[in-house]
Length: 480
Image (cartoon, rainbow, N blue to C red; front, side):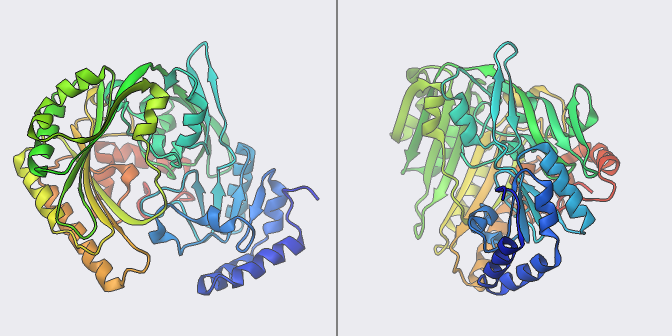
């Protein structure tokens, strides 16, 4: 029997396995018994994975384990746009909610479902047209795939640092990275895309198509399932990267870094973090940076912070893709919430004082807490807010508060943690006059429509009504 087929014996084996999953497994078992999975399997060149089957647990697991109890009734492992179309139509015919997953890194758990998960992981190919410099990247490719493919080439796009993050989600929500100040956001490199719509139609988007406009930054999961992307690459050579840590005088160091970097050339991309280590009131400041220049030039740029206190860490010059190893982070699954806000003005001494004060008040039993800012501006702000769906074109920094906790954290303690996070966020908003970043999607936001989409909201709503009138692609913070 072909590998993609699911016969009755395999189906029942998967159903039996669901019963071993506890209370959640009972619900999955009921769903599995009701639905015609064999019919879906016959339509796909890929496979259908049910609860209890080998590999189901790893495939179903989201990056944010806070939402790990929500498990799909079935997973369609798609290998082509035609598979995606068939999966969408099967879900609609059977009244099954659906969601697409490439990396599974939705901060609010929107890349999982109790219905059908359309997994894009096997659609991860990348090709490069050397004559045009356009890279075609399949909808399930992740940062790690891009690292491998481009590793021996001298071109890049604006990419992320976590290997398991899907490039689809990155680009569809804007796409920040250390290249953005010099070259623009990931979505700014997007020149074409293939998308499967709610009626199963496969469309190629290019030119001034308003759906391509929407795919440049509105956020994933809103209009359809993008099965491939064409990006205009840019040339890269050797760069200087740094990972520097200061254990002393955190207020002065943080203030010095954000003031200095505010004047830095576009060729410097950075993230500045203030971290509260577990069980400690000491604050650690870290700078991750990428500079199209020499190590000496980077040290000269950071002279003010070096004069306050010498950092620990590394400054090195390497070939572009080799240098990314210094900046990469593993992004392992964890329990967390992250809340973001754009700063449309400088981060002054008053904001720094608030940031450090709230970090010192972090619950000491939490796993970790961090306030970080990614420097924006530069090429990001060269476009008008209406040129792409990504509306945040006036910012200087993107700030984010991260809070992590353990699986067995008692509910009352978790409420205490989240109250601290909410208080910290509200204290930051008066200083951060911009909106919120749709790729750091935040289930606690009340003003999310305007915070994510600003003046582009009405146009996005009109496109949504036209291409998905029945709301097939929906979640709590989806474009209505």
